Length: 329
Image (cartoon, rainbow, N blue to C red; front, side, top):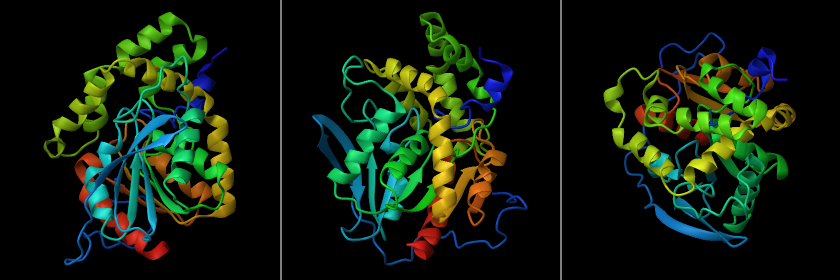
């Protein structure tokens, strides 16, 4: 039976919705990196909008940067798509070869029928792993947010030593409690049609999607309403609601994957940057600080934002990412 202990220790921190600049906590590095944009004179590459066939499935992706440059793989969260990385792709393409795929059922990727292709994190990880091979990526820095960690960790674990650096943006590595997941607990417990219906009534609403963008944001006027409106609209597409509910239900299975990811990162110690909104309603600043339990050398910079920190802190995050990758790749 699902107890309160399960609610606290089940996979509440690695989810969907899966799912700091003021002072960084005392545990964070005291040195302040250069967060400016790339040097003047460097030009971003145009973004290409492509598709690739993965076992008969059309997977859409955004690509920019010079072939041969170090690769950065951007994996998006829920309920968004690679569109959330528009600005970051442009900024990083100055020095890096950037790939940002849409998961099956998200963005512009194909939406296979659920009876033919189950929507689980294992399935998404399998598709993105094949995507990495199909587009010719040999090594990469992983930039993961929200669902992107659950997908990206699976790629990391299946193909060891290919991930050369990790950038976590509002992406959990450890379990933690958050009230945001409370309405999912009955669904995780019994998996009934009634519990699924109630979860849909709560999570598949404009209010919930909007709150992902605005809760914890210091200045909401910096967040383009078109971002949450586009995400909400994507949930209205045929089949999209059921896909999201399938994945929200599958959150409960991810504890072992997180533990395996922790063990791998502890052993391999890849350079790691955590650049998250400390006021995240899913994964708090305290949760993000826990990366240091596995990676003592992780660089942690928590900005005064919420779950979708790129929506209002894109320039700051891009600057920190540039500075970090410039040192470690």
